Length: 238
Image (cartoon, rainbow, N blue to C red; front, side, top):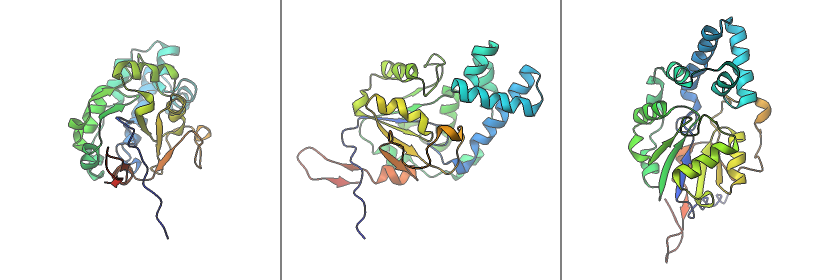
């Protein structure tokens, strides 16, 4: 059987990675802690029973893009209080995550983390993974003026902030809906499927969505398989 050709991303010079369930596998179950702490925060802040708090949390996520956006818009919440609380988690589950340092270091151009979480959370996670030194910048929810993915304004601010060209950028995400505006702006889109879905099921595509160029079951293997076309030379696969 002939193997499929390696994806050619030789035109890419800006590599944009979501954080949670993308730079580490969802099997680490780290986001379960964040999800639980969001429910606890909503319950304590709004004096709701846990079941009602969980339902409101998920409704805010579906309607506003993140639980935080809903709390800010509807309840006038201070975002710093929420972010500090929900990201106060145990990072030990990341110790079993695959080592991405080699494949990330070999990518030509700049590398960014683009997250709906906080810079502090992104730095804590990437430091634990041993890859924090490989990123040029973190574009977090504060830099996005608290407008989360997949809102178009968030992507516009990302490009203004980084100076990256959409046509020369690749975006890696575990939620298909967050790749729609990336595709519309001309980015190369890669859906990282780790086997667990934290978004509303109705918003996710079970097959190959039309706005997704590539699907990666394993981020490290995908990055390691990329084909590049050096100037004046033949194709090579790293």
